[in-house]
Image 1 (cartoon, rainbow, N blue to C red):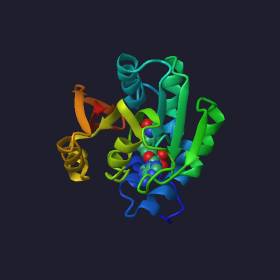
Image 2: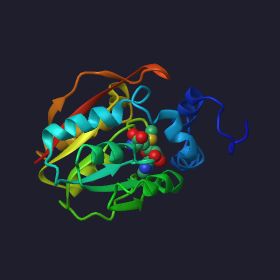
Image 3: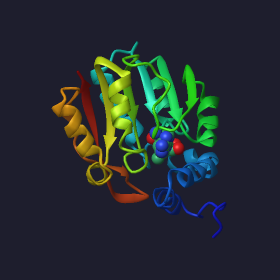
Amino acid sequence: MSENELPDTKAGRVDWVIRAETNEEMRRRYDLWAQDYDSDVGSYDDYLVPWEATKVAEIVLSKEALILDAGAGTGLVGQTLKEAGFQRLIAVDYSEGMLDIARKKQVYEDVHQCDLSRPTQFETGSIDCVITCGTTTQMPCASLREFARIVRPKGKIIFAVVPDAWVDFGYADILSELEAQGKLSVKSRGEPFQMLPTTEPDFYCEIWVIDVR
Ligand SMILES: C[S@@+](CC[C@H](N)C(=O)[O-])C[C@H]1O[C@@H](n2cnc3c(N)ncnc32)[C@H](O)[C@@H]1O
């Protein structure tokens, strides 16, 4: 199969993006997957994460909160948040292909292309909450430091955590470091649930709420 060909099956596409060897290769793969992403995973019976994360957001945030959806992709999380009544949503992702789909949904007040392996344009303490879903095996773990910087004191990070990847990809170490510095503390860890019950029944995820101090 050439690098420019999408795998034929949904499970093949999920696996193909995870197996990208570089950040740039993954971005290109998401650009290619973008048109089919929502028909592959955008329904409640096949990708539960946006709905589970939104339920948690409804408990810990006010509907006026300024929420940054990090690794927003095609905007599935923005859609579920908007349906739940959240009004102030910003999307960031490095795949223009994914963001083109997100823009058309008109649920975000701003949509920015940016690579979360680098510092973002957001000012320190300017965001009430970062929410991030489907990204533990993909975004660089240094993004957690950036989230701790841009979220205001007493704000939240709502992170859909894949527990093994959280450790293997280095997030656990960065969280420990930021906890020791008094910058972050874990407020709650939700029960594990199957994030892709039909496509990948062995993938489990937990929704964590992290307080920014
Ligand atoms: C599995 S998708 C999840 C999209 C969306 N949050 C959802 O739940 O449907 C992962 C997203 O993370 C984005 N991503 C991965 N690495 C990134 C990086 N370094 N900077 C910005 N976005 C990144 C990809 O482009 C992709 O849109």
